[in-house]
Every structure is written in structure tokens, then in C-alpha cells.
Length: 204
Image (cartoon, rainbow, N blue to C red):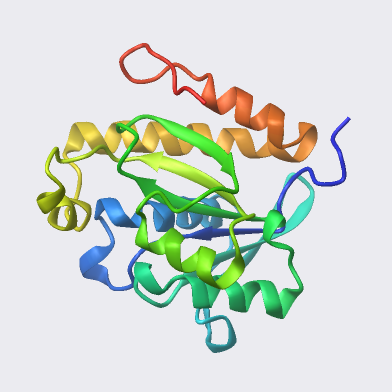
């Protein structure tokens, strides 16, 4: 039986607004919430008070807010804080979906709390909301040189990498019913023990 903290009330995808960024690695958070909205027949609408685009879906029998911040990634905190304040949401009931340079394409992890790991979007969310929100980390790999990171995250993945990222996204979405029905720890265990693209494991 899941505890009272099973599930989430909102899922926020991090990404940059504008068509020129839509297919880039930095926008995989947008990919996730866009896919959720399509699957549930929902459409995003701009909400000035939320500093972004908002949709609402029914997920596993529970109403869930979806948000795409209208700011650039490194200013995402204003939108997340606005969502929490407007709907009275606790940080621990908000799931932020983001790209992760420290994980290879095809790997996805679920995490609760912690630091920002150098991700400027997470850094801003932590500054506005505190660290206690949930995170769905979608691996995009690393270019191997920190001087190339900006160009790398603002570029589209290769076709093979995109397939791996989409597989990871599918696994992340498959874990959401587990999150609601059995709680965070069980969903985290399932995702983090999932075989990786090379037959390894995601780790913890």
C-alpha cells in the first residue's frame, strides 16, 4: 500500500522556449511533458501568472499539472515557484524533468532532493523552491570537454542517441503509475535498476 506521499501533483519539464530549441538535448524535459499531454489528449495554454505554458491531465486517476516554463532554462525557478504558489503545491509533490550530462543516452533515474549537479535550470529551481522536489533525470551523455557543453546541449542528438533518449523517456513514463500506486522508493528502485543501453545498470 502506498503512503500518503505517493504520486505527484505536478510535472515540470525544463527546456528553452522557441522552435529553434525544440529538438535540442537541453529540451528533453519539454519532450516528456509534451508526450504526456498528447497521450492524455490535453493541450498547453500560456499562463502569465505561471510564467509558462500549463496543461492538466488525469494520471492514474489523479489530477496532475503539467508546466513548460516560458523562460530560458537557467531562469526556470520563477515558473516552478509560481506554479507551487498558485496551486498551493508542496515541493515534494513536484517532479522536475531535465536533461543530465552525467548519464549516457538511454539511462533514466528518479531522485528526491539533493543539489543541482551543475545544471543551471535545477540551480534556479533550488534557489526559488528549495531542494526537496523530485527529479526525473534523462541521460544525454557528455561531449567529453566542458568547453563544448553549451554547444552540445543546444544541439540535437544523433539519430541513434535520440532513439536511446526516447527509450529512457518511455521507461520514465512507465514508472509514473508505480510512483502513484507503490510510492517513490519502489518507482526509484525499478528505474534505477533498469538495464542500461550497454546491458549495465543505471545505478543508484
